[in-house]
Amino acid sequence: QVQLVESGGGLVQPGGSLRLSCAASGSVFTISSCGWYRQAPGKQREMVASMTGGRTTYADSAKGRFTISRDNGRITVYLHMNNLKPEDTAVYYCHLVGEYGSGPFDSWGQGTQVTVSS
Image 1: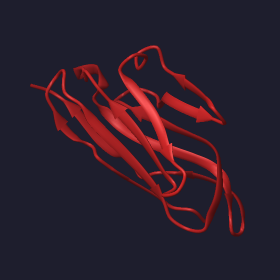
Image 2 (image 1 turned 90 degrees about the horizontal axis):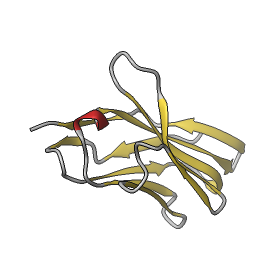
Image 3 (image 1 turned 180 degrees about the vertical axis):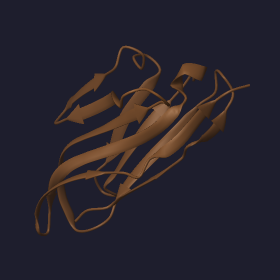
């Protein structure tokens, strides 16, 4: 199975920026879709940004501030977050779907904490 390793979370002041990374291990051939989700305490997990083919989709709360990107050579997906707000505080998860050496995969990362506070 393909494992995802996330990094880049942490504590940042309001208005600051972070870049989350999600690296896939294993013999990944293709990524058909990727996305970032988040879950705040007491709330349901929600989609923040996703990319399928050449099309990107953002939650209304992320539009204009967050950017999803991918490096196909490194099989890594990024979430660039600017102008962070306290309401962005959550555990962020990446999700990748694609093909690897043993067939299709559908994997989630372990989550990385993002805390926006002064």
